Image (tube, rainbow, N blue to C red; front, top):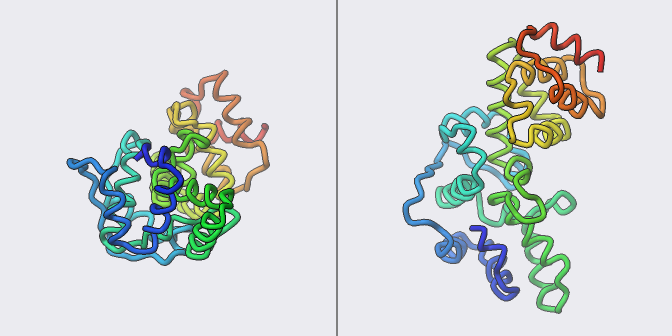
Length: 252
């Protein structure tokens, strides 16, 4: 699927056009699919285009339970490509849903405009929407690197938010943490960037739980995640309990 980034412009045009029809999309994408892929995804819900952009919190648990991923699985861009492929095959989403960006949230209009402008020789918006589609499908494009896996793929975002919530429950009893993660996209994005999935903060699950619990109750100042990550890089929290860690967090 990384080869999708190397498509020639005329192939990108056909790819975007295929998003308008399920069977055309599946035919186009078939050449990029490994024959023995094992990811299966057929939960008991269907999403509207808006719900795909902001997957409702009520679906998080079902997504998580259905996939049975571990952290390594959920850090692999290929798995999210196949989750999305399965979602299209099973009519959970329509392929054109992928064509949204932060600034342009109407996928059908985006595709129509991108195709029309390409036909006129104008390619800036065409390239923007093409990249947006790849970001939603599997996240790992050159401009974004690995963080795109955790910040750009809607199903991945839902999985990781629920996973972070479950980690927190190992140490604190705060059901509000899931709602907090759902509502605070900026905090989640800062958190996964600082975790970097080099397992700096994530490796200390107690610290992560303490941070999530504190933030859910007290809100977050702009630099909180950055400050906690910096402190965690120079001292160990292993001997401290959650309350003691939160006193440190409060003082940052």
